Image (cartoon, rainbow, N blue to C red):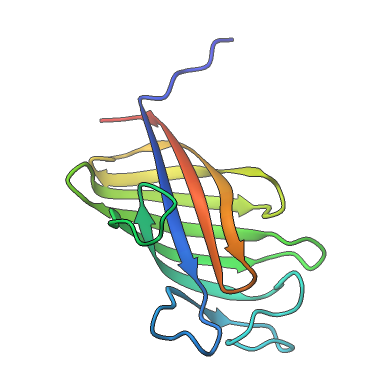
Length: 160
């Protein structure tokens, strides 16, 4: 069986700066829910099980977080397993640049310890009207529980 070819490919980076109680001025995400043994300033334990984080992160075309942003990643993720470091993501890329205008919606499990992880592209607006496809996530950088950067390789299979 021959697989269809993507009608559009994009590579974008999003930069998540997690609020840790000391970085309110530049934090782009914050823990809004925590288990009874956790708190909303510092992520819970080794797997962060039970923590829910809301994000409003910069999106860039390269891995330099000081590059010109092309949009924002807005949504949430929550850590959903006690025994393995993994999360579930639901977020939207809100793009507003000279190249792209519109949104791309994503949803799916993110087993963080895997080198690459696929999540679903479940819709979009503007230049990405009714988009569907796959986004491959790769952790490009991380600094403990304060910062991480994801490379997002998006392959759209329905483009209008």
